[in-house]
Amino acid sequence: MENIIKDSNGNVLQDGDTVIAIKDLKVRGSSAVVKRGTKATNIRLCADGRHIESSSKEVKGLQLDAQFLKKA
Image (cartoon, rainbow, N blue to C red; front, side, top):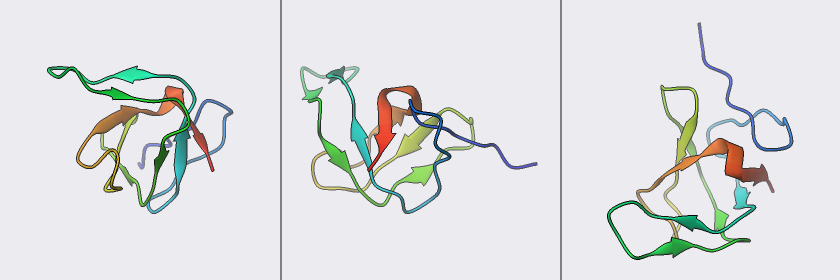
């Protein structure tokens, strides 16, 4: 069975979607912050059913919690 990951508005996310951060997110283990409104493109869904990975320039290689994102 495949996990269904939804954004903050309840929209179903799929691999390759573009999402936008709805609030500032601190990056663990770093002093960096993903600012509200930052776009993450070409996302990949994680197997845990809660996180996404992005390969966009601003948030490359980070796992973000889907509850703090909205589909663009």
